[in-house]
Image (cartoon, rainbow, N blue to C red):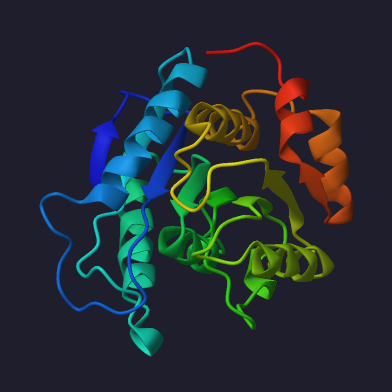
Length: 231
């Protein structure tokens, strides 16, 4: 785990998990573009937390790939969550992951410290486990034009998770693709708001709360219009 902000007495923690590859047994490069893509998400989250009492950290992967049954980033994420116990004991943790990192976040979200997951364009192949997420919050953001990971797979995951007792919903983003570059500010703003909501800092918009209650997919443009003004 690499920490970015560690307040003296954190009220909660946010752990960022960047994307990677399906198979790669080499370490991430020094110029790690997937990790760099998550930095503005972290900055937006910090701006949404004006009290400055939220710990922000990033999972550091040993290998670039998921690597089949090895599930390497899952082990790294679990170790990072265990490290957080000493820095923010008994505080809620929200996981924010992209692509492979979102898959890893969803796998480890059964951890006792985790209160919710914001999954960005996640890699959700058929048969991904959901029962361990019972009692958690989960919001999946995906652009249906994504050509790298499947939004349809994400919506199927949301429906299965909801049936398993997860407060889960999807948000169909109007643009962005897999890298979330077009209209990036909308992705950053919505992710920061959802993270604050899962940490109990703000109330979720009624449209999102209704989607979570029914395990449905809501339209991202409308949801963005429903958000209160914020940084």
